[in-house]
Length: 143
Length: 184
Image (cartoon, rainbow over all chains, first blue to last red; front, side):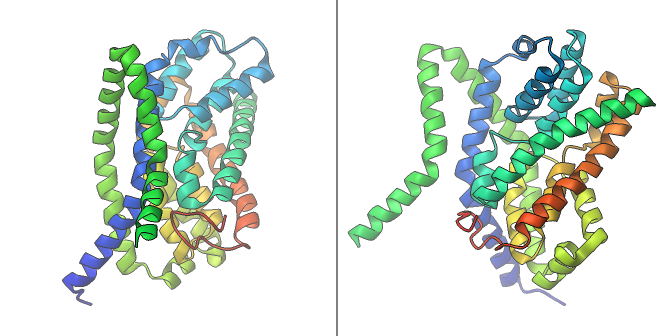
């Protein structure tokens, strides 16, 4: 089936239109992320963790939820956290929530996918990151 | 006519409110500390450069999907009735997708309008945490057992989360407008 140039052009235009509507919030997120990365050094994150096992896991998941960017950064920070004695469960929750929960990206997700879905997905992803961390560490410990 | 123009102006202002407020905050901080502003703009520039190929990729996929993926096709492969096939497709697509998560939202919204289930959207988004190309980096910091276990647990948890959100959302209305989310 040969497609006319007009069909391709229309389809491309509509795709660009869909993206154009999302552009303002995406630009806002990029600048906000860059700003937060500038003012909060990675080394400062270690000081947020306490000695309590459960609190650390919640802190790990919360931190990962707020932070964003290349997952490699989360692995590097995790290495530092482990070196400073933070538990593996907390670190695992941190790296999972880094990519599954998005507080910073929430405005874009809410705008494009809907407020209710964005809210429910992020809340359940937060809980799932803690669950993933606990199960992973328990299984690894048992093996 | 005047009323229409002012309403349109208000709509545009509302659309740009978030980035404008962010830039104002950055601007104020820059006045107090120019290094912060310089570093922020540099980092933002780097992110934009990194995102450019992803933006092109997503536009290409969206264009192709508009032409080749009809509503019935999307519904069959990724809809509520797609079953295990749709689930596995979503897992695979989530794993191989690259770039920032927010670049994929417009495509997902469009597929959802065509019939992709919320369950499969959720599964796609959760499995984005698995980055096969970054496994070598993970192995520097974590053991092989840990990495493999985490991958398997992530996929299983994504099924659970997908099922829960699918139960809540797949019975209700789909997105009626892609960027308003009013129905949600």
